[in-house]
Structures are given as C-alpha cells and as structure tokens.
Amino acid sequence: MQTTELVRFKKLGKQITVLTAWDAISSSIVEASGADVVLVGDSLGMVVLGHATTLPVTLDQMLHHTKAVCRGFSKPLSKQPLVVCDLPFLSYQCGEEKAVEAAGTLLKNSCASAVKLEGAEPETLLVIKRLVRMGIPVMGHLGLTPQSVHQLGYKSQARDKESQDKILEDSKMLEASGCFAIVLEHIPGEIASRLRKHLTIPVIGIGAGTDCDGQVRVTADILGLSIEQPPFAKPLLAGRELCIDALKKWIQLTNLIQENPTTKTSESKSDC
Ligand code: KIV
Image (cartoon, helix red, strand yellow):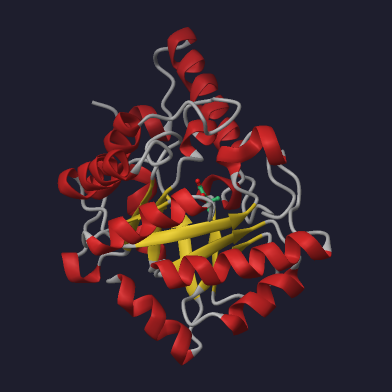
C-alpha cells in the first residue's frame, strides 16, 4: 500500500481504516484485520510505556517499536498495510535538518513509508515541505494534538468560530505544503465534514464525527485494553476483563495441579 492509494480511496469514496500497533503481536492482529494503514503512534508512550503524556517518547523508542511492528507482518510486502510512524516530540521542532535526520532514520531502518507530525505552525510547514522534497511522505495532525497537551489539554478543540477558521486555514496549509493526508482529532463533526469537502487529500478522523474520508483508532482502545478509555473511542471488546479472567483461570489451574499432582486438566494433559 502506498500513500497515493489513499488519495485514490478518497476519490472513490472508499473509507480508509487506520489502526495503531506497537509491537509484533499487535501488528500481526491489525494486519489480519485488513486495516489499510498501521500507525505506530507516539500514543505508545501512554498506552504501552505507561507515561502520563506522549512527550517523553524518544526517536530510539519509536524506531525500536516500529521495527517490531514490521516483524509482525506475514503477508507479502505488496499486501501489507501502509506503515506510518509518528515523529516524537522534539524530533522535528528543532529545525529542518534535525527533522530530516529523524524521519530519514525511521524510514531507513524500518518498513515505515511515511511519518506523521502535529500542527501547522510556520516552522512545521517548512519542515513538511523539506521532508516531502526529500521523498519522505508526511501525514498531518490537527485538532487535539497531544504533543501540545500543556497548552491545549486533552479536551475537544475548534469549539469557537476563531479556532474553527484557524483549523480550516491550517488544513489548507498542510495540503499546500505536501501532506498526503491529515488526522483530525477531537473536533466537532461539522468542521471535519467541511474540511473533508475543502481538501483533495483524505481527512482521517478520531473523535471528529463520521463524515471523514477515514477513521483512525488506538487499537488498545477498541480492544478494551487501555486503562483510561477516551470518550470518543468505545471498546468493541472487554479486553482487560477477558485477559484477567483467562490469567486467573491459569493461576487456579496451576495451584490445583500443585496441590494435587494427579489432577488431570485439559492444560496439564497437553503439557509435556
Ligand atoms: O499517537 C497516536 O496513536 C495518534 C492517533 C491517536 C491518531 O496520533
């Protein structure tokens, strides 16, 4: 899957599905689900590494997890989902040279074909233009941008006219700078819908209503594995409860076998 395919999907009116992955197990499951894109999001800092924000995530950690994601795929390359990797905080805010080096390192050493970065500040637009000129596809990210949590919080964005006008303007700038798609996080559905119509590149929503060209979700949220579930991502599975129940069962069986070694259970029979 290539980035240009996503623009074709938009033209055809085919919904684009994006799921996050953070290791080989999660990417093998996401690949088998048939998602179009795997995002190695820096949300892994919170979901997997237990941080309170995405800010502590390093480029080395992103590369380490992206490599594991790539090792989890089993389909031939041409059938694998497109892999997009987040540029972590401070890997692209300190100038174009540093950003090219960070994005290039991810693409050079993993199967990622594109990077995602947040915001549309003038410096960020210059970085995007430079990356695109260097052959590195870029996905934009507007609305709730978690790397700006200390300014914006984790609340819904673009609630007033001024910030709605700004997000419309920013999205056009991202498109003009060469982004191949834009993630819109936690904004009113009407604004996402307007953006979708204004832009030729796909808008991928999360907490941005249903009238988008595609949707992205943190896989752990859908599976009900996240400790804190965002309001806009309802789990489709009680993953934590199912896992805890299964592990409790195993502990009970193990204790039972130790107390009474002659006990025959389906697990002990198959054990060697
Ligand atoms: O880091 C991430 O997982 C993301 C998605 C929430 C879009 O950026």
